[in-house]
Image (cartoon, rainbow, N blue to C red; front, side, top):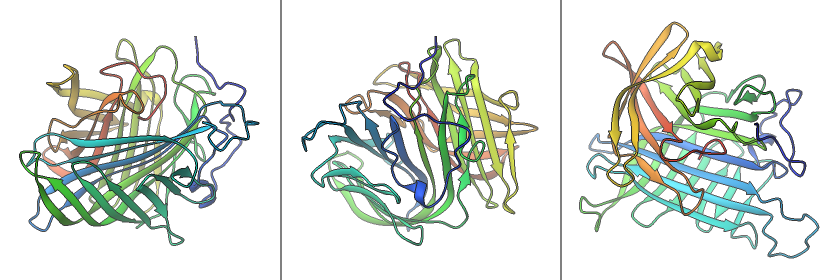
Length: 351
């Protein structure tokens, strides 16, 4: 059994090519869409932090002819998280609201998404202004491109399963230069360090689709790596219920712009060490070996406890964490690793 696009939503097809910057904006005819920024930050005292901020747009299938301003045709959802080894566990927050009244929206033609006071806005020169004032922490960041976007799959058509319709439109912006400030919680979680200036490097994904994961899929492992030499690596594995890959793909762009893509049989995620959450009792493979063709990459977390519980918004519990990338003991770069479907099976893609 395969879950496919339903008639009221637009379909992902191979004959469409992503056009930038127009496609940085929203695509309201599709079921699901997200703008997903992750990265490593460095404080003035040379401490490492990880951050995530994501905006989701979800079409509900509500009757498009409903003229009411309160019609729940689109939902806007946002997640934000901060990984601070001094605290020892992820701090995160989430928001959800129906689109409308200038309080929650995702605009076409250019990235401009907002939910209450949280926002991600792309300027004409490609820079992103990111703001999230959460309960225990805050992110006020500027993400500046240093290289061209990486169009994933075949001109943006990215397969997510064995059937052609199991796909999304997908591009990435790796090697984003980060500046700005964060507000961190105190060691006891009840006081704040105040605003801390930060610099760093980030990765942004934008993806939209109308299809659900195959019924036999439970979730996926995903990696976005900013390598120290300026190259970029994206890899993912959609896992079946027995843990094997239903689909996998990777793309490596060298610093000179050459892109190598890897077929499903050339990509593998192998657990090296697991960590069990004290809150959900879920076991996550937080240290991994990732194979892309002849190359193997070792991933080790900034800290183990980077579990995010989004059951009040998207309904998922997952691990999304800052990881170091190495090979044979040599440091190669910084990345984010996402592990979904370990606590409960997912029916859509990125959470």
